[in-house]
Image 1 (tube, one colour):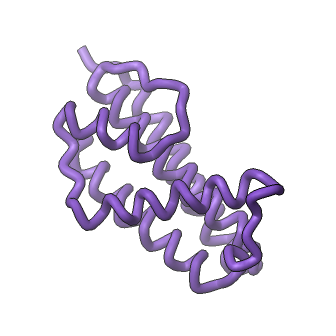
Image 2 (cartoon, helix red, strand yellow):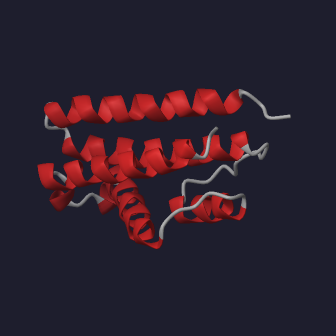
Length: 128
């Protein structure tokens, strides 16, 4: 029997996307990149709950997606580099010694938001 807990994870992922959009308008580009990574991490963990699996307490999107793929999530090969890019944004936005001034720009923030929305859409199609 599927736990309904996955729905809370989907809501939280959607919240992160809403906050990303708000922060994009406010020109908080580094925060947009961070929130987009979080949105994808959370939706992947929601997928695991949907499959009656307890997600590992990790932040590695590539490891999470590999676990999800084993449970039936179809992520296209061209989405893998996007996941890697979001993971990179997470590290660079989270740790001061890794903060990259290039990350604080609108183009990368818009790209992160586009990537996150695309991946979330893919995952949500499997949550039926």
